[in-house]
Length: 138
Image (cartoon, rainbow, N blue to C red; front, side, top):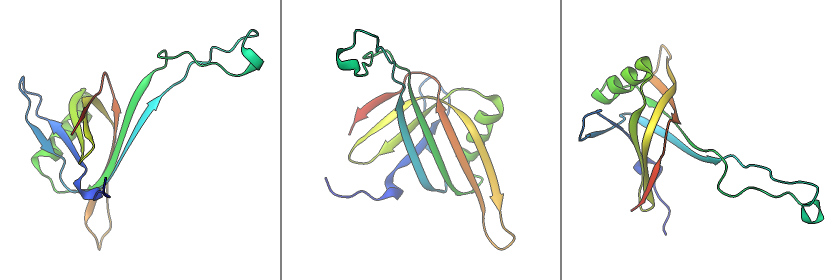
């Protein structure tokens, strides 16, 4: 697989409708995705050679997404703000070209706005998974 352009990685929020339409979060310059699985240590005095044993399939899985970029005051920005203030778990989609997409409910865990007097207004967002996240290969 050839190298991928980071700008092609998309973060999308659903409009919350029964048949959702996804809108790309405007102005993102940087995006990070973290897949996590907490392990459960099942080691006991009978463990062979006292090597750690992990209990397969018993840990808690989570996904964390963060991004930052230029504030554009687009319709997607309004949906992000609404999602934050309502603390509602909206369906989000993260598209990674030539790899796959993750989709599921996320809460906006942090939303920051910043700006310098001689620069553009910017924002940063952090999402935390709030239920099952699916992966679909592209």
